[in-house]
Image (cartoon, rainbow, N blue to C red; front, top):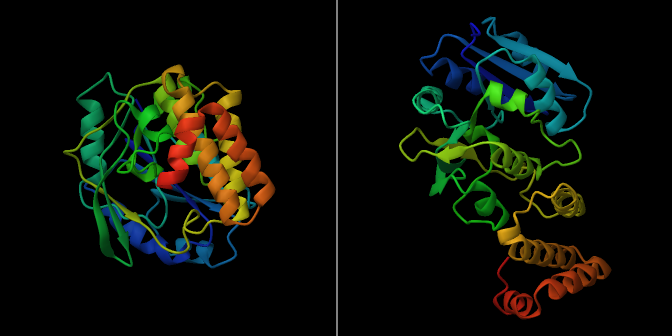
Length: 289
């Protein structure tokens, strides 16, 4: 067994203003045998300089030319030595007992490969919403059918390192904002995950700088690739295939319409209508997306 209990992999692009708060949150976790691997994804700010002020050798800095958050997480995973792995975003907040409560949940239930807990959304340090959570035991269905209270941010999920490595699970580098959902779907396909409502919540930072805060052509394209990857790798369960695909095509049609890519909006609208004409019309009427 590794001398490192938990490896915290932190991808960061121009996130220097969050680094010292991240260090403080980790050091307040009442865990000694940890490592924090910050993977600098080609930052142009003073990330390296700020990190150099941390003298605790458990905090490790690695630089990569800008390749995206998925590549940064994958490189951090390659370097990780811990028995447990947490992919934590640099701007999220770890309340006291955040790590220990997740570790205890896994150590007391050997049948579980990864665990999440409640989520509180914050901005500028202030709560803007509670009642959210990670995906539960029916995670694939909850993610693909966009259950409203489910948050797929990786910061909330603690994994057994052995489970990830045995199944060769990494983040899809073809994806950006949807990589979180895709990764979790693959994890649920190969293992068992739960949401434990009694463990310490994640404080999930939501701000204008967030990758998915604004609808852009790049974000819409990312969702297109997400559905292409799901279908090409047969990751949508047969029991929800039509419902999931209907939602996906509707979301893509609506997204293309909003960014004034009308030809693509029509294409995805036709695809959604073909999946289920009446239900597609029902979504249009309700504007449920």
